[in-house]
Length: 118
Image 1 (spheres, rainbow, N blue to C red):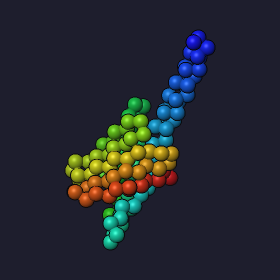
Image 2: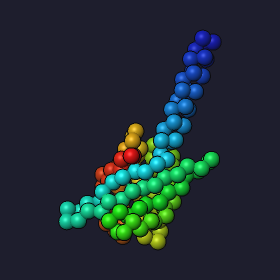
Image 3: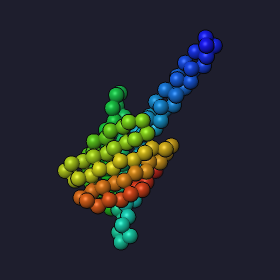
């Protein structure tokens, strides 16, 4: 049993390091295109990291570069972006340099909306 303790500690420390590294990768520009078959809208999610939190905004490329501030909540691999003024809700799972989830605005749902970090 005593031999197993260093292995457990090493495993926990490695997992904690990987979790921190993955969260650090969120900062930057994430690009995606909403499409309903008739029209498409290019979006850039800008994520910044401060000492202990994230801030984010969405740039709507095809709408004159309009910048929409959004709240961001990060929990392990799950990320949620919200803006009550424009009724935006995007809940996604992060995997490497991609996040995929459901984007909803004014009752319109876009499942499997993918953002790629560039």
